[in-house]
Amino acid sequence: MVSWRFGIIFILFVTGAIIFIRSSVAETDGGLFFSEYIEGASNNKALEIYNPTGTAVDLAGEGYRIEMYFNGAVAPGLTINLMGTVAARGVFVLAHSGADAAILAVADQTSGANFFNGDDALVLKKGEEIVDVIGQIGVDPGAEWGTGDQSTADNTLVRKCSVATGDKVANDVFDPAIEWDGHPVNTVGFLGSHTVCWPTMTVSATPSLTPPLTPTETPTVSLTPTPTATCTPTATPTPTLTITPTSTPTITPTTAPTVTPTATLISTPTPTATTTPTLAATATVTPTFTPTPTDTPTATVTARPTATASPSLEPTEMPTPTMTVIPTALPTVTHPPKPSVLPPRSEIFFSWYHHWLILMRRWRMIVFWFFDRF
Image (cartoon, rainbow, N blue to C red; front, side, top):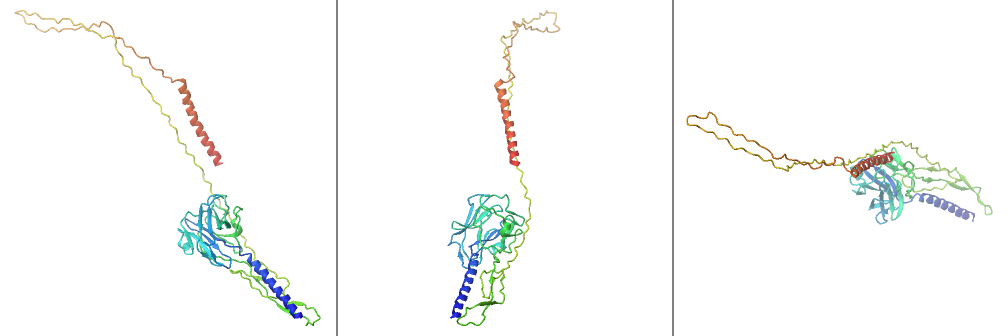
């Protein structure tokens, strides 16, 4: 009778331990999440999605898609509906169709659309539910989030092996150094697989009853040897359990790697202002005056002299006639009045006003450039 009761207690203890371990591991099965991010030269851009569960996921059937928010926008500029299946504890790769052959060799789906840059937020959705986010929606970080190799521009980011679920908050502050390991530009050797290091618990024990029981005695349990526990990184988070007499197993987790970020100074472009000159045309008018005589001169011609020849004499030269012009009156020329050289006062006023407006426009452009620059 005592042995039967002890058996029930022993079975309940083992069952509770199994349920506890399974529930701890189940917490890591939080659904799909981004496991790798490549933002390389030209079109070398790719995203890797990891399935931590023990069941294959139909991406199209469950409505999975990736949304890209460009330059701090609050609405997606590009949406790609995912097609295909992610195997249990496997990966799915989405790449740009113009990427290098090494990336396309492991790609499960490609697109020729305009992909993301280092300052664009990426969201993995299941229907309308946010599953994971890279970046921060509604925020333009300038060129990138993070610094050095652990930044979103011209780098490869691989999710740390200890991360078991995605970031489901779209507008929280994003720091790649917390959950990502950074690698130099165009690093593609990690693409196509993902390694996790969630702990697996192993416990061993041998139960014994001391002293020998009689029907009137209450059984006692002594545990030998001293229980031990180890945490072993593994790619498959399937717990194994062996019962050993134990008080409380001690788990020594591995030390998280220390990452020292480096900063890269990004130059700030200098704005350039272009001023279009305004030309004002002027015309010069030269008046022409034509004198008109009021009187017409008259001429009086005297009679031409004649020569008289005698029979015995021949004239030696011919006399030359003379003509005398006697004007009856001198002509009078009347000139029209000379126009005034100076323009009216209204024209002078508008000319100065026009130049003043041009000067004010230039000053306004200089002031706007100054405040925009500093």
